[in-house]
Amino acid sequence: MRGLMMDTPLLISSILRHADLHFPDREIVSVTADNPQHRYTYAECFRRTRQLANALDKLGLSQGDRVATLAWNDYRHLECYYAIGGSGYVCHTINPRLFPEQIAFIINHAEDKWIFTDPMFVPLLEKISEHTPQVEGYVVMTDDKTMPETSLKNAVSYESLISGERSDYMWPEFDENVAVALCYTSGTTGDPKGVLYSHRSTILHAYAGVAPDVLNLSNRDCVLPVVPLFHVNAWGIPYSALMVGAKIVFPGPKMGDGEALFHMLEDEDVTLALGVPTVWLALLQYADKAGKRMHKLQRTVIGGAAVPESMIREFGEKHGVVVCQGWGMTEMSPLGTANTPKAGMESMPRDELYALQTKAGRGIFGCELRIVDDEGQELPWDGVAYGALQVRGAWICSDYFKLEGSAESHTDDGWFDTGDVATIDENGYMAITDRTKDVIKSGGEWISSIEIENTAIAHPAVQEAAVIGVAHPKWTERPLLIIIKAEGQDVSKEEMLAWFDGKIAKWWYPDDVVFVDEIPHTATGKIKKVELRKQFANYELPTG
Ligand code: AMP
Image 1 (cartoon, rainbow, N blue to C red):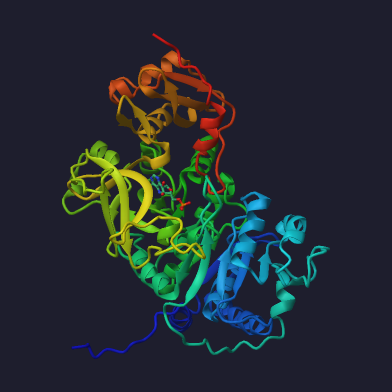
Image 2: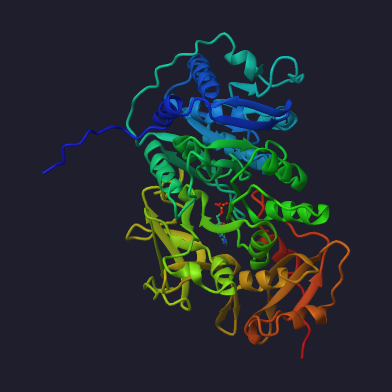
């Protein structure tokens, strides 16, 4: 027997309609290329979004056509999200930090028809435009006054595109499984792969995101997403925040600027900030140097890479900010786990709680997790056994765009293989030990490069640490620790190795330490281990 409930499609336009009615006065504050402090309300945002939707309908697009954005986090980018997706097109967010060839590749692979770009990326698009002939036109996200001279085809400023458009718009109704957004992985090997989100997956993911044990978002929050709108939909914030009517602060091009972030947090009364560890490093370093304390921020969600315990402590002890580590991936919309205490854990000794917080967190409802061995057999949740981490759920990709199963990313029984290696403890807390490709195999046993890195980074003289496996005649591979020293600090190899005493297993100690000025990063800020392995391919570890 079927239930007798309305079959209302889960479409992102329903978030706009709800937010417009309930939170018209809520503010959205942005830094943009043409305005250091733009401020308006939800009501104004939605009026302009409807104008943009009307303008898009005049561009000769068909339902499902891809319209790309190449932009930082600001209000116009948010308007694009809703106008493009809400009217039945697909919003393809492009990461400007990719190499120009990769950007051209994904524009062509996605078959983007129009591109919305920040003025600062116009030269980049001009450089590759001869390789992307199918793009029909470009919208530069500024007004006519600051519109740059450009050779780009049919280039028009954003403000002139929407000005004169009607501010009413009937959001179309369609199947909730229709695609809404497209984001490419910044694969370290091979071509980037497209992940195509649906309206349904996006709404379910946004519902999951607001829950108390996930982002804990409410109408009373002010949110600063330092995670880019071009990286997995800024972890769903454009949808979750609007769903509850939270105030939003967009940092625009100031994402890596510790001082600018600090002032946004304080001046706008931000309660929740989200980002990868690297941006928080910049913020904490600024606060430390300037001798300042954060007074307003209550909590921060950190993910995208392992969060060192030293960062969790610094946020907690110096600034009174609670860190919630999260884990996920582009293929997962991205939320998979969040690290919040379970009942009874609040009273744990502080050191134990900090140690727990270094884990990626508990699986959130809607995303099932399992770890399996090489034969695909499920491994126990004992915090010790480690294996390939697999997931399934309504906001996990079932395939990549136009790859038709050729990526072989799914198991026969329908789970997505994340490419991460993890443990899960008795309480369900998952910890990433490595990417499958980065695992160091020493004498047949696995060594977790992430755990060594996290231990190293806690040393006050270490700014950044990376650990890779280097060939070893007896053990197959042994860990090599690569370090950037913190400004004005010094540490010797011997002091560094002594630092590991009592902190990690003896046989995990790196065989050698090298000091460098730079560690290569991917376009989403992760350490590029493939590059490091190439760089140190012929490295000879000390013998004896
Ligand atoms: P992306 O698709 O660019 O968001 O990258 C996803 C990958 O980032 C995951 O598969 C992990 O390898 C890594 N990652 C994300 N969150 C964490 C975390 N909390 N700890 C360790 N690695 C993480």
